[in-house]
Image 1 (cartoon, one colour):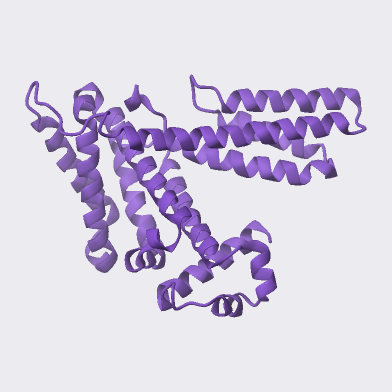
Image 2 (tube, rainbow, N blue to C red):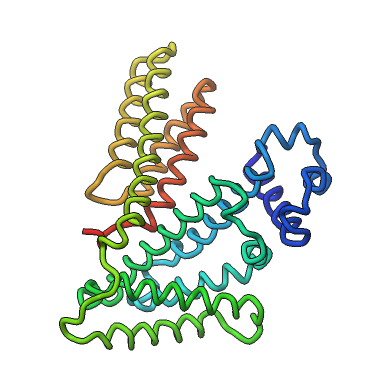
Length: 310
C-alpha cells in the first residue's frame, strides 16, 4: 500500500468512526468503503484496534508538523508562538471529524497501545509548551514553567471545545493572541520568591516517559543501521561504494544520537537520499524501514528540545 493510499484509507475509516461510532463500525463496513477485501485489510492492519491507533498517530503527527513548520523567520519568539497556537486551532478545525471522534469515543479503553500512545502525546505536547514558554518569556518563567504550561494546556483544551462547536464565532489567530495576552499577565503576576505548585519531581513520570520513547527510537535506528551495514558487507559491491555506504550510515547514526544538539534535517535527508540513489534492490525494504523510524524520531525531536529539563 502506497503512503498516499494509506492516508486516504485512514481518512475514510476515521469518517466512518466519527459518523457511526467506533464500536458500531464493523470491519465489513470499512472494507466496503475502501473497496478492498477483508484479506487485504488484514494484510495492512492486524485488527480494528490497530487501524484506530494508525488513525490517531496520523492525525497527531499532522498536528505536530503543522505547528513545528511555522518558520523561525515569523518575527519574535512570541509572535511565532502565537502563530503556532493559531495553527493548532486551525488544524483542529480542518480535521473536525477526528476531533469529534476523539470527543465521543473512550479512546484509552479501546486498547492498551492506544492508551499508552495518548499518554505519550500528552507528555510530548506538555514538554513543548514548557520549551516554548521559556523561549518566549526567558528565565523569569523558568521557576513556574510547569504551572504556566498546565494553565496554557487547560485554556487551549477548553477553547478548543468552543472552537469546535462554534467555529464561525471564533478566529484562530485572534484567539491565539487573546490567550498569549493572558499568559503575559500570568507570568507577570508571580510574586518574588513565590513557590510553584508543580515541580520537576512531581512531573518525573512524564519526563521519564518522553526519555523512554526517545531511547526506544534511537535503539531502533541503531538496529536498522547495524543490519544494513552487515547486509552491505555481504553484498558483491565495488569496495569504494561499500565503504562509502558504511561510512554514510555511521555518520547518520552519529547525527541522530548526538546528545548535545538536535539532528540537522538537511544532513539526515541528504544521507538517506544518497543511499537511495545507489539503487541497490536488496536494501530497498531496509532503507524504507530506517527512513520511517528516522521520520518518527525527527518529528519527536522537533518538539522535545529539553532545555526546561536541565
